[in-house]
Image 1 (cartoon, chains in turn green, purple):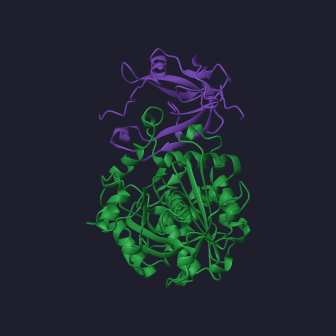
Image 2 (cartoon, rainbow over the protein chains, first blue to last red):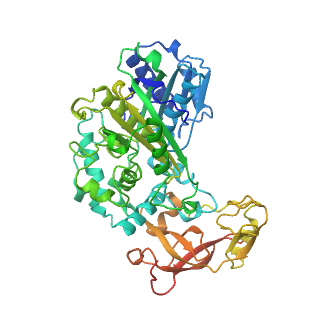
Image 3 (cartoon, rainbow over the protein chains, first blue to last red):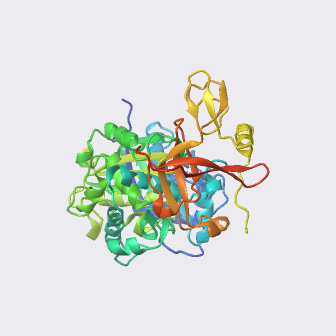
Length: 390
Length: 139
């Protein structure tokens, strides 16, 4: 099987301030995150010959990756503005790794930034999302993007007995994690009762079951494994990647409780040569609490239908089977739109480098990142590992 | 009141919206492989055959899933909240998105039988909505 396993490494990561960061453009969030990632890697921008980013909701650039490289004063020979909605994060890293492995580029910046909170009003942000629905078969019925995901959670509750309290536990645990992450947008502890008492958005989801709206950007520097050994940071290797695109419309999904994540993760595990049981820590796209529960199942961390009890027994935090979203995720750290899933990857790199400070999962050698979007229309998984896992 | 978004009709969907306007829900059936599909396409989504034809549907189905929207997605929907978006599984097989009418949110359950209601919102556009069709059946 053809594979980029162990051939490409992440050698630098950068994050801008997140939350409400007024006055900054989407381009700035991309460029600042990239500047920080290059500094982290200890390399000059002249070494960058590829750039992958995602479109901004706010900025009008149709060729965002080209606009970002111009802003940074670089002229890459590989450029890709990639959008598979929420799955863009892991998919971007995978396509950059593939490009490096195939010889299209040597050193690729994968970045993403947007000012969803300051640049768009909350109402406009939601409207931008609703307009991404099918104008004939969905939009006339007033679906929020959250509604698509809510339909999956409602069905999961009916099929498997998942409870609102179990959904809420995801938000509570994620908030506990955010308290240990400097700069997180949300800094006050919450309880299950708080989640259930927060305003209903689209049943079964309350406000605190939903991801934030934020400003922010993140960037990663990828290069060949050969070059990575000379860099200042311990390389974090790409061991596997997989994607799955099962439908556009939620009404065309064969199942709404088993998703393409089962396929994307199976492919990623196969390339990496590992089983879910070997993963030490994970970054799971947490646009909604129920999403996490379904993903824990589809990614193979627990059996189908057992995601609720799995969460309830503390399996997704320190000391549990698989600590996830140790930075606080999109529920509590930041969710600036497409950049939301990139922070999970930055955090997993920090975990594998052993530099996650009080968030560190002891002895973490293998990490998984899963990104998804569009009511599970899109799914992308990557497996990362330390040198010891090669 | 602000106008709600109306579907922009195209060549793939013209017959579908014309059917709704006269009180018929049309589904595309493939004459080659028998596949029944939602939404309207110029080809069969299973075998890519071009011999797809519209046939009237029963307009009956069950609630496959639902979500009651409390926070309007835009100003146009503000006076409608709370309303229940429903994923209906039609007896013919395919599923479609709609909203329930005359259904208090707390009474909605997965598996309930529903039937179509034709909601004429403009001379060209009649939206397919659903209402409860008697007692709940097991799914």
